[in-house]
Image (cartoon, rainbow, N blue to C red):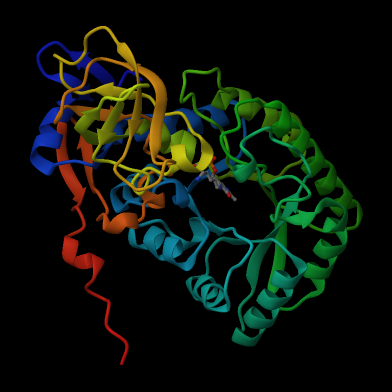
Length: 420
Ligand code: LLP
């Protein structure tokens, strides 16, 4: 993580900006993002695809981090968007992503959301079931629209990731069963209001190994050929997202490796490719700043209690996810001691960021950064325990600014009323 450096005087720097300065001015908990890291990662990914000779459009998966600054920067880089709700669609449009560069995935698009997608005339709707195809066809037909659809096919591949974020097994709720895909594609070609333009797949998230991708892509490529044998036109393949990151510095797959897997499967098929990465682009670029409230001594490991909690970053509680934790202050950055358990103040034992972690001694008010928090961080926050949503800050070109104010306390009750 070259964007994070420890300075003997200023402590932890993000692209040259002392994170302690942000924590002092904005308070904690606060999310901070490195704009340059997001840009570099986008360009590295796009370059790897171009160097492999792939006709690839990168659609940023908005769900990973839907801050306006993030979306606007990807729009400026020429990225499209992968959205999964009407809200994400509107946020992407508002940030300047053209409607034609938006694909819409998800198993339960409501009629209202379909209407929005049709009226915006977005690039592609990824259909996930027969029922959805029929609903979309009826609606688009009635409105006099023709929706470009891709069938999202479930390749029945186990990506070997956390059970809660695996999506490509036959028992997961996503996609059309592989064996039904040809018949449904032919059906789509005959229905009013929809035009099948291709296939989509997505096997899960935080995938570290390329083997499941190769398996899934091979199955999708075979399906492209089968569809064409039936005289059906297939112009695009959406390869999904999912490239994992090294939260614990574990070995990961590279964009070049993924590009090679795509090339191996689709290189000879004359299809336009789409991919929908989220985590890989933004995860490593973000940190969550927190302060130590107190250190509770026990007969077991001491508890370091932070002012950030599972309502801010839920990943450790929800997926047993591992996130690095580093102190901001130079004086704290001495040889790790411990081990300690790092927790938040929320009233659940699951509100634990780390167990048996070796950290330098941390006193009350010391600041820490929880690493790799740029993806599935702020977007999964809640106000559980009546804790307002944290602030967000942006570091670019050695300067920083607030991109979202901390939620005011009043917002917690301002739309409530007593029953009439
Ligand atoms: N495309 C589709 C259809 C998806 O469902 C997802 C993620 C992506 C793309 C982007 O995947 P990525 O490149 O970010 O892996 N909250 C979980 C992750 C949930 C992922 C859901 N789908 C976490 O914090 O690990």
